[in-house]
Image 1 (cartoon, rainbow, N blue to C red):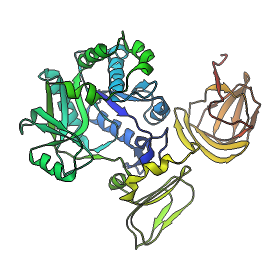
Image 2: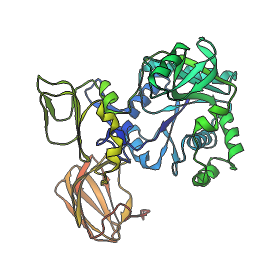
Image 3: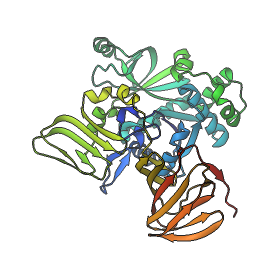
Image 4: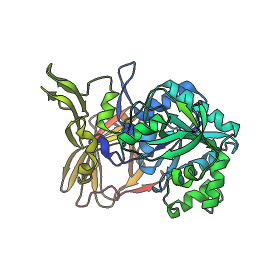
Length: 438
């Protein structure tokens, strides 16, 4: 089975745990058997491999998420990187070309496209296999998953099939309705449109070539910023006559807000937190190293991270986005392909950061024009290279680097250090990368 997972979004609705480079799918809130926590993307990837160990998984995403994906999933997963945001049709067309021209998958094979962040069980991925099998038959150019509605929702579009069969032709689509209109749709046998569908690779390649003049994936990637922003629904779905829907009656939740996300949490408290006996339906998610105490609260979510603190009624938490949009913030935490960093302190001419490098990983060999840096190793072992000079380092060692000095650090074990940046103009764009001399 070939699967493309759409991983987009800026993470505003789950502030303060999410930000412009750490979307909701990377927040670790789902408890595993060993007591550790995994993120949405880790959970979905694990479930796919459980159902189909040989599945080819490709994540279509923006370049800001690539490091987090490698950090959480390793280097095995395929990544189709959008150079810039151009809506869902260009993203899916680029991912399709990636499978054909980079992964060399036969254009006659089918692919399933779905969001990266649904809360589902293994039966969902069995249903995805069914979509793929149906697309392989060629009875329709596009096969959608229609989710049996559990209530008249205003949040989803609806698919109305021609018959009540498990696989049926699509009669029509309906936009997000009011609750009363949704009830009417459901009475007609309507299904939720969860944005899950399958097609043969050659089908989207042919449409893409009609709309865009390109030769292969690499050419499309180069031209990507010139593409018109358009949705897959508008460019493909609404214009397709040979289209089918398959019913899915299993568990499916869109965990897009704190309200829905806390419904899927096994523990009421993640991180340092305490609820007294008078609390009910209260959840604490705390990434800070300070305790949070809640008393006498009901239907409340409390979330704390270096980005900020949210205390909200669960229903009201759905309306967080416009308030977060007003905030101008320094990114305080991020997962990178080599590890992670957390900003500890920001002053006018200095910034202090705690850096964790995973075993066997290293930073890029780089320099800064406008700032000096000091590294203090607090745990682990590794080595630094400063202007070509290699040095073994361990806890207690201090390394200083003046502006313009080329430097990197490599972790032989998990390596933690405090990085102090000093200068009048400290910003993320002040970085020049180099190849190591050896």
